[in-house]
Amino acid sequence: MKKIPKSFSLNPAQFLILLFFSLIIIGACLLKLPVATHGSLSWINSFFFATSAATVTGLAPLNPGTTFTLFGKLVIMFLVQLGGLGIMTFAILIIMIMGKKIGIKQRRIIKEELNQPTIGGVIRLVKNLVIFSITIELIGSIILCFRFIPEVGWDRGIFYSFFHSVSAYNNAGFSLWSNGLGNFVGDPLTNIVISLLIISGGIGFTVLVDLWDKKRFKTLTLHSKVMLVGTFIVNVTSIIVIYVLETHNVRTLGALSSIDKVWAAYFQGISPRTAGFNTIDISKLEPSTILFMILLMFIGAGSTSTGGGIKLTTFFVILFAVVSLIRGDEHVVIGKRTVKHDVIIRSLGIASLSIICIFIALFILTVTEKASFLSILFEIVSAFGTVGLSMGLTGDLSFIGKIVIMGVMIFGKIGPISLVFLITKSTQKHFRYPDAKFFIG
Image 1 (cartoon, rainbow, N blue to C red):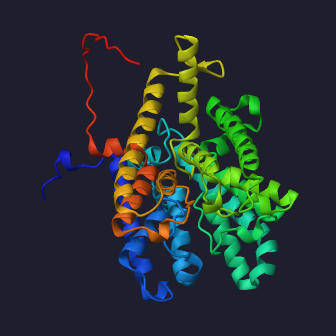
Image 2 (cartoon, rainbow, N blue to C red; image 1 turned 90 degrees about the vertical axis):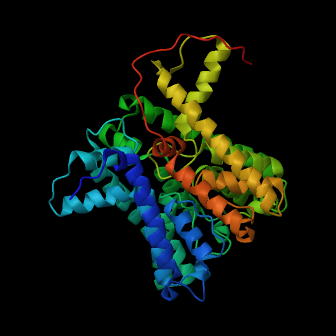
Image 3 (tube, rainbow, N blue to C red; image 1 turned 90 degrees about the horizontal axis):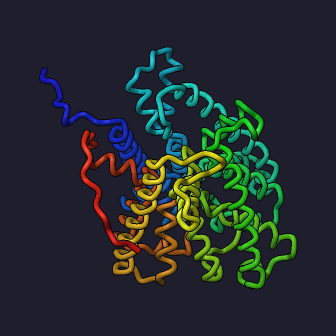
């Protein structure tokens, strides 16, 4: 048998992307089965749902609660779990359970999937990741049972609790209620549990492991410190901004009691960056609030997390780089540590490629869709950030519109840099060209 030429061999990033597309295809085929739906489901919608679940986005052209049977809902939940924690994570777990040896190739793939700098400690990270995730999801579902069982009964209450716990922790935003979590806008238990699940999943696996190992803030890595402090600052700012902007809007917070206003602002301040759950009607928000949410969705969650976006650490690296430029500093410094030049270039590359992707999708959808510019932009950035919030456009998307949004969801999940590695071949240059001068700015 002839050996496969090296040019046809897949690097870890390419293998993961191939595996990811396989998951979407299998998921779409399962959702197309008659046993999965109440009635018929078109192929484009089955692929849209599968893509949305595998990318842990949560955008839905139809109401998942009424469209799918128990089997269909289980398929979506399974796709969300695999998409959130990673396909190879579960594959490695099965290999470990079978007592098989995990080779260097598998470790390299895991390193790529979990966005780790080296292969050292990746198997331990996988073990901790699975244990943490399943434990957090189970705890969340048990607590939610106290609220959901009285609402819909024992059988549905238990399933709804586990489904929403998995959806929240993996930052998917899928809800089985037609109005999202609007029925629980002022419910403290639901707001706190779902928001904590969102934050836990969106903060990043490496941060959770670091917290578990060290337990003291001073001994954490700089990445963990930036993620924790940054998440706190962004969330608090978001809650205050949304409360101020919407407090007099009678279509959203304005119609609620004083305490319910606080809960609604709290939940909607945390959800847009990663998760996509809503307790108020997003389409009724003020344009200024919509623009602010677009920024939150673009920033996204943390690296190695279940969420999308350019990532919070990327945003802070760019922000500190701009501050350093304004101050005339030679180096970018965060927490008394100098940020490497390649990290700054990578951050700028991620942001630039993301903006280009959003612009291309925006241009196409302004041609194909009959909707307002703001709702189209909101839909696209929501897909890119794998958030899942919508101003009501998802169900009205044309065939081309759905294809474009599916592509944006995949782009947001895979990431700009991984996509570049997929289509280009890295070459090491052992020489340097002469410097050139350009007039910029």
